[in-house]
Image 1 (cartoon, rainbow, N blue to C red):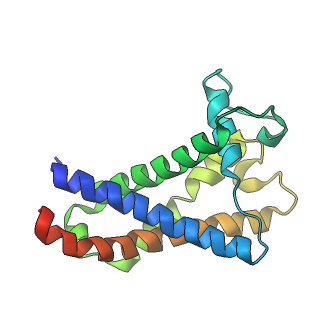
Image 2 (image 1 turned 180 degrees about the horizontal axis):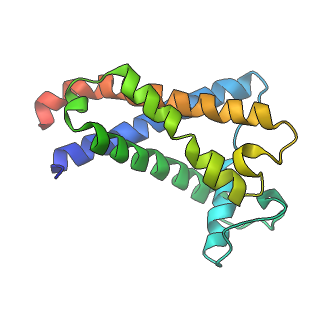
Image 3 (image 1 turned 30 degrees about the vertical axis):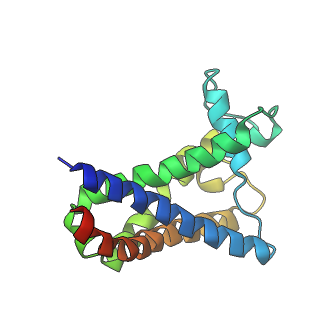
Length: 168
């Protein structure tokens, strides 16, 4: 069972790793690359409240909802935090005291299964973005982003490590 301090650190781990992922997306945007529009994620989740989980042709063609941008960003960060809790659950709390790159990077790569097999199909893009104009590029961008999330777990773990002496 996780202590309250471990829950807090794991929450910070997820937020930090998601921030690193967002910094990567910001750099991509500066270079002229298209990145995930979190408004569409919010629209997708918003339509779930009406019982619609799968969209054909695409969620982008559905009517906008008023809070989609905020909802999308909230879901993005909540997902990062949930992934961090799964990661710490699988590796154990000791990873927080001695962060290691390879497990974090490997876990980040594994998390690409969520967009490939849940989000993209449900949002109308097909399994692993098979219905978008350039599916291989979309797949690569998802893989890179989730790898960066894994790197973010490691980097955030290094930043949080000094807090352990005060919290644990």
